[in-house]
Image 1 (cartoon, rainbow, N blue to C red):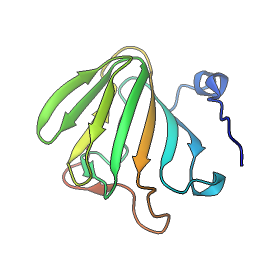
Image 2: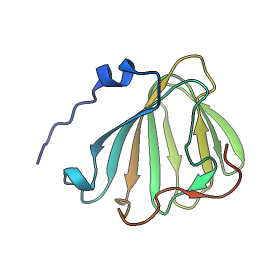
Image 3: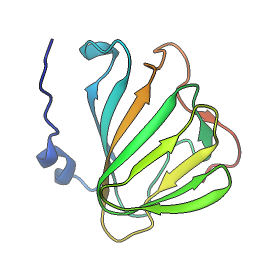
Image 4: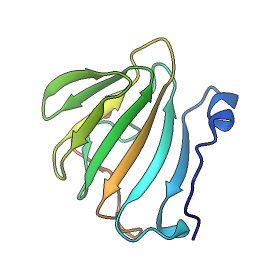
Length: 125
């Protein structure tokens, strides 16, 4: 078991595209949750558009500003903000700013590897 996991910030900044770095998942020994570090470039966002999950999802914003729609309401989250998406609540996120956003995505309980993680609920955003 790898007890310390480092975000590879050099990899995140090396490309302009969306980047996801798994920090804890099924493949690395997770038993109760998953954690990813995600960089989202300007004008990019949730690959599934408006969607739900069968697990709770938390985003902790490290840098940049994230735009969100949660249960029909709009929000903006900056560095140091914890965003809570309870299981079953429709949501989407995107980067409406001029710089990339970087956030930690925590999912609990651990999502089942053989089921769809994001379940679309409307037009892609």
